Length: 105
Image (cartoon, rainbow, N blue to C red; front, side, top):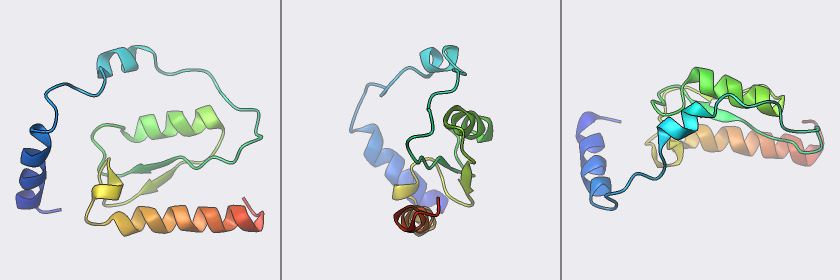
């Protein structure tokens, strides 16, 4: 995403809320946490290579928590569904869902 488009979106978003969605300091103080699942659910843990909110370590920790392999989408940012390259993430999700439907996950 070029800088001009980033600035445009930042300006639009800063007016939408004057309050943070959550306090990252509190969240970080509680991490990492122990493992979570008993393996009865299929879980996709997907992150973005240009994510400045959840870094590679956070992606790996989340995947370990759910006992799955993480998937990192190259060239997109944190809110990948809003990124200009959103199709990359959508394709990965669609492929994962197809495998799940066919029973090969």
